[in-house]
Length: 197
View 1: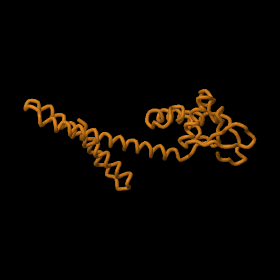
View 2: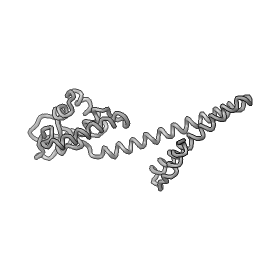
View 3: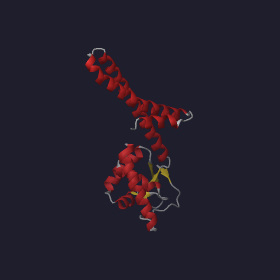
View 4: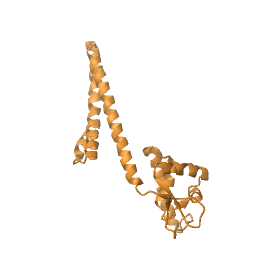
């Protein structure tokens, strides 16, 4: 737990300016949806809590967060603990207050992007493994197929080859990105456009 500057004060929520309050609300709702739908690290409420703390100049208490989000204090407390575990928020001390206050770790956007890209990269590699295993099985099956059955196998192989173009191109793009090589967006663009009718 880090000590904060002694002249920090507890803030009241909402903001004095309704327009800023509306902006915070928009950011919270969007961050909650993104967290729940894409990131897999925290749930919707956790994403909203982080978004609120991220746009707050001063640390907020559990009561502040609960009031702003309109969710129970126990729900906030559970999600704060998860966010602490992920090192996305930290507890801070404010002189003269017995409440626990929390502040956002500002490296979160970088962490989210890095983790998200790593997740995508892992999914691409899993897709390639699946495609290669399937192609191998189709190729083995072709050895025993009757002539009239070869058409279906050929069609399946063509489809697998087509989708492999995209996944191999996307995988190469991410490999280049993570290893610091120059990125050739045209490889990925061509693979995407080649899969369109």
